[in-house]
Length: 131
Picture 1 (cartoon, helix red, strand yellow):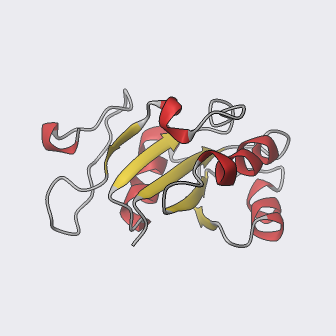
Picture 2 (cartoon, rainbow, N blue to C red; picture 1 turned 90 degrees about the vertical axis):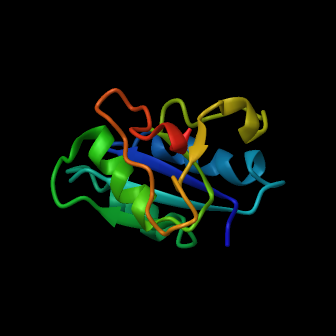
């Protein structure tokens, strides 16, 4: 089981997703991780680009523009990680720093059960136990 789930929410991000996803392996190399890209119905081919260029990363089609919080929920629920780092492509680029410097980790699970934490509209975990 990966220790860290990196959830990247996209919407028409084909022009910027590359820098983000290319940076993840080096930044997270010391941590067992998975990358889940949740696409909010991009019209620019973002999901197809990710599937073809990064086949090891999972792509979830949100089925419409679900918004940042709901898209994070989709990614968190699909993850197997104990910790989650939720982002968009722009702040996802750590520029050579380790993923620990992103300061965006939270518990994916509020308890040992398979349930994941839910995110509020402000992007914070809704359960204090999920922090």
